[in-house]
Image (cartoon, rainbow, N blue to C red):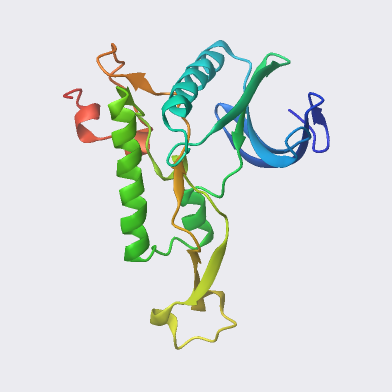
Length: 212
């Protein structure tokens, strides 16, 4: 869709591709005005995806208005329409919990880290519910570590193996800080709902049965 090194308007230069999904793709870009790297979500030029993108922008603006510190939800930097694609500019964060686990051969996080991530996630949900907002699509793919930095620690159950063996070590994030992303499916409390919400693989039984 877009080539590396190409300009995405005069302000943003495409540096690399960060991810891709049904909605479109996410590009790492250099912001010439702010002199920083940002993540830009390029939404497919199809009506339903454009509509979802505008919902996400509205929600992000509301969240930003009430969450001045940007502690739990990804921060909207800017947005624009480019060649019929809604482009949403975000602060650049680290990998998703899912991607981190995948690259770590799905080794579990330390329990203290799980506890801290869980606390932040609950704070984010409580913050959104306080604004009468329901995310509807919370999953590891939509929870990003703020930093991509990590350390390697020995995997003691494989301690008999050589340190040269990749399975001897596992990666542990240096920071437990997270932020929630992807607000395109967010709805307002008491708003008429389509009973099919959330990604199929993470869908709760009561949603599948239509009893919520």
